[in-house]
Image (cartoon, rainbow, N blue to C red; front, side, top):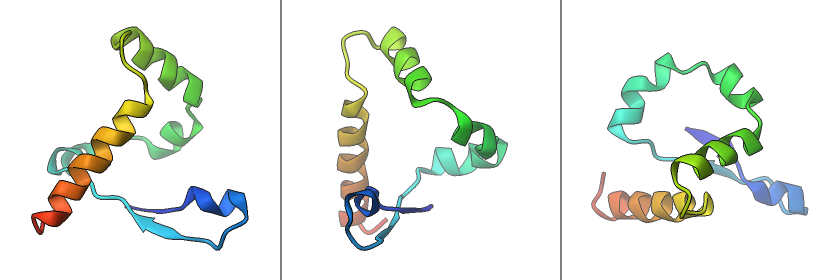
Amino acid sequence: IYCESEKTRKGYAKVIRQIPISPMLKKVLPLIDLEQAKATNRYTIRDALKRIFPDRHVHELRYTFVTRANVRVQNGK
């Protein structure tokens, strides 16, 4: 998966980044309605995660993702 970096909103040059996906996500990705997912309000997602994980912050998912992605890259996957 490729995306445009958030830095473009801050006046920097456009940066395209590759986002690694897990084998599990690769299997279910065709089942996801991407247009509906794009239209989902970020606060709806935040509130749902807060109900499920009341003692955690949504931003922790980013750190977990980045850590695991870096490990996969270092292991040559």
